[in-house]
Image (cartoon, rainbow, N blue to C red; front, side):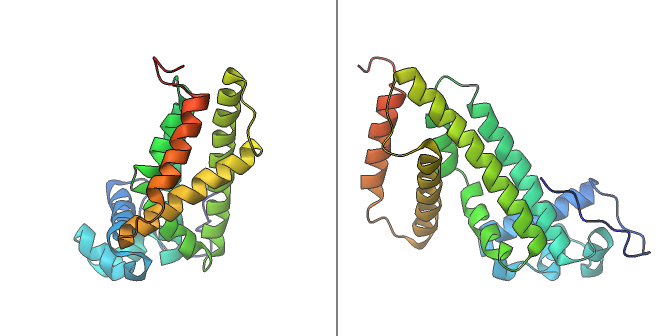
Length: 203
């Protein structure tokens, strides 16, 4: 991930990075994105959730952009760790797919991606996260394909992109109450997983 933006541009004292209050504000920002969307992400809303005065937000973060970047970085570190851990399991692709479609992080990631179009600092973090997470996905795909001697219809990086795109699209649509086509795509992916990572007892 990219380096934390410098605070040397200002002489005013800032709250300690990594303190309980600092982390509470990041958690509040993530919860706001998950429950209300990026339109509700303001310093006033963060202060309300944490139970502090609004000006205290700017004691810990120079700008809302900095708070947003740090919130994304916290989520990305957590998500990448979970993804790397799937590589240690017997069936990494199944574990990765479960991470993609059964976590709230997918919904929050969508909100961050929308915000990234407005923030250069966040855009760099999102790009780094996507590239690293895709590399993990490709590694898992390659391992499973090699283990079962399966020839994919498209390259592993393309499969990783399809899986990510499908999971994000389904997350957005589920939030709206749309499910058309979801069962069909889940069935297709399930059949692929059965081929490359057959469950015990399957031929």
